[in-house]
Image (tube, rainbow, N blue to C red; front, side):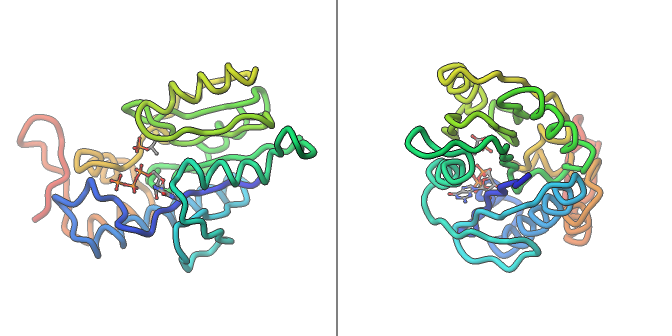
Length: 214
Ligand SMILES: Nc1nc2c(ncn2[C@@H]2O[C@H](COP(=O)(O)OP(=O)(O)OP(=O)(O)O)[C@@H](O)[C@H]2O)c(=O)[nH]1
Ligand SMILES: C[C@H](OP(=O)(O)O)C(=O)O
């Protein structure tokens, strides 16, 4: 199955700007992307990076500088078909590039759920949409805000069966400084290594465990 991995090369991870410089954010975002690509391949998926600009990665890349929703919907048009064109029964997955805890086992569960429902979706904390598999030809996306709820609504509108995939690993997108602790605790790939080498460590002195830099 083709797995689209959206990736913004333009000022990535701006919500981490209090703790990482622009160059560091670019390097950390790239480490997460490489981890996600490895996890997708480990789960038997065929990743395709959908990037805002050229990027040199170990996967095919499609460059589309439109906003996220438009770019992903264009990719879904190409894979799932539209009412005007022949419909393809093939499923397609979309997995965000900031899922630093993603593992082949976690993605296996998502992909398996996609065999049993027209849309199988892993929500992110805060109501976002971290990953999904769709086989329904009319399912399209509308990201940002509580997009998980919007996507449930879109699935209902087009008559697609929907199943939620409850996964800590796929539910943890790395957006804010507090999320970095999750990467230090559970990350098994390049992103965790990158953070440790950049001087981040866990600190439990202030109540909830946090990632702090020496
Ligand atoms: N192709 C594409 N990918 C995007 C775009 N915006 C975000 N992404 C990717 O979509 C996923 C979720 O992104 P967000 O967390 O919403 O945004 P971000 O740019 O990573 O981070 P912030 O600047 O902090 O919002 C990540 O994999 C991003 O690389 C876009 O306009 N086009
Ligand atoms: C793309 C967006 O990501 P977030 O802003 O929730 O990280 C969403 O999941 O709708």
